[in-house]
Image 1: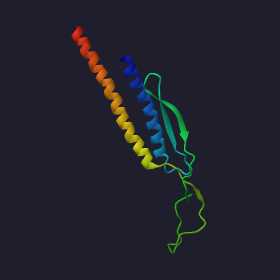
Image 2 (image 1 turned 90 degrees about the vertical axis):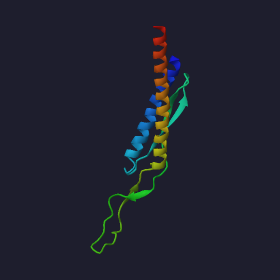
Image 3 (image 1 turned 45 degrees about the vertical axis):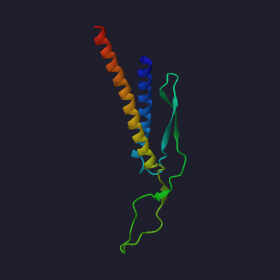
Image 4 (image 1 turned 135 degrees about the vertical axis):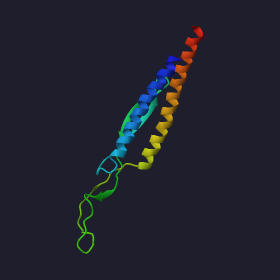
Length: 127
C-alpha cells in the first residue's frame, strides 16, 4: 500500500509542475513576445506520473502595437506605430489544463486520505 501512496505523492509533484507552468503562461499572456510552455508527463516505474519535459511553444502569437494606440486631435489613429510579437498563450488551453489538474489533485489527495484512514482503522483494530 505504501507504493500507492508514493505514486500519489509523485503524481502530486508532477501536477504541481504542470499547474506552475500553466499559471506562468496565464500571468505572462499579455507580455509581448512571451512564448508559452507545456509540460509532458510520463508514467514512472512506481506507477505514478512524472515530468518528462517542459517544452516551449514556438508558434507565433501574431502582432500587436508596441504601446497603446495613439490618436490625433481629430480622433484618428496615428499611423506608423511599431508592431511587436504578441504572446502565443492560448487561454482556453491553459484554463482547461488547470481544470484537469484540479481533478488530478483531488483524485490523488483522496487516495492519500483513504490510505491514512485505512491505516488508522487497522491500528485501532490491532490495539
